[in-house]
Amino acid sequence: MHCLLLIGLLSSAIGLRWMVSRHPYSGQKKGPMFGDFEAQRHWMEITVNMEPNEWYQNSTMNNLSYWGLDYPPLTAYHAYLCGLVSNMLNPSWCKLNESRGHESSEHKLFMRYTVTKKITTLMTLLFCPLLYLIDHGHFQYPL
Ligand SMILES: *[C@@H]1O[C@H](CO)[C@@H](O)[C@H](O)[C@H]1NC(C)=O
Ligand SMILES: *[C@@H]1O[C@H](CO)[C@@H](O)[C@H](O)[C@H]1NC(C)=O
Ligand SMILES: *[C@@H]1O[C@H](CO)[C@@H](O)[C@H](O)[C@H]1NC(C)=O
Image 1 (cartoon, helix red, strand yellow):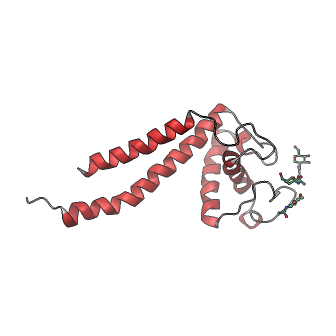
Image 2 (cartoon, rainbow, N blue to C red; image 1 turned 180 degrees about the vertical axis):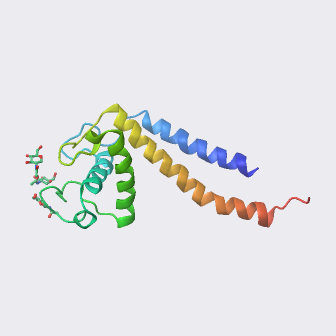
Image 3 (cartoon, rainbow, N blue to C red; image 1 turned 60 degrees about the vertical axis):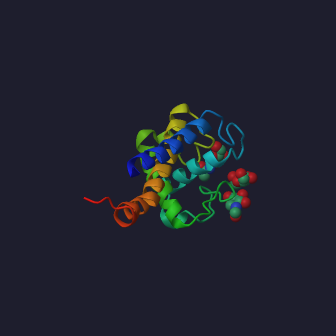
């Protein structure tokens, strides 16, 4: 029973994501700031190319007025991990100071994948303990 529940939740998460992805994302082709999508990409660019102690400091290479990192370090490290993968796949996706508003379709696909992965991971983390309780606490089948 819990497998069906999990599959249902995951496929609705992925389905929702898919429906959203068929429409332009917020900020697409809207310079100079673009949008949330660009903010996520920019954080990857900053964290991959700069030392952690420079992430929150305004400088010529890190203009904090342009999507400065304003989330706690955990988010920054998440951006860093995604950025490492992004950098491996295609360095132009997070080339510091040269990739603003980067909008190739491969990069879009990559960004969508990181978001979908996040939702899946979150769901798994949220629901596994719950499923465990249901399985082993409340509704134990007589053997
Ligand atoms: C950061 O520095 C730039 C100049 O390099 C400036 O234009 C911008 O307003 C500064 N932003 C903040 C948040 O201090
Ligand atoms: C920093 O970013 C802000 C917002 O995009 C922009 O208005 C400003 O001119 C930038 N400063 C520099 C030095 O690039
Ligand atoms: C960053 O890029 C802008 C425009 O592409 C350029 O004018 C500026 O000199 C660059 N800044 C640095 C520090 O390379």
